[in-house]
Length: 73
Ligand SMILES: [Zn+2]
Image (cartoon, rainbow, N blue to C red; front, top):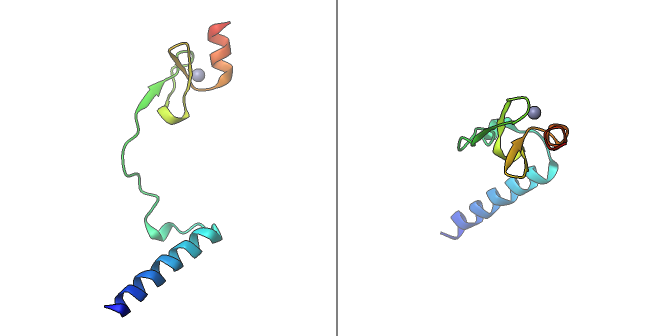
């Protein structure tokens, strides 16, 4: 039981070390999208983009700051 705990802690330490190295390790399979993000539409150019990347202004949605200013004058 103690050995198992040791190996678990060792695994956690190795993962933490790899993260701190900042190396791209796609083989870990972390890059796969766990959930589909809501897509929203820019009010100016009509492009679709993830909600997290969208800009909000006066209850309207924009893809970039330039379009937000363009629409709101
Ligand atoms: Zn736009």
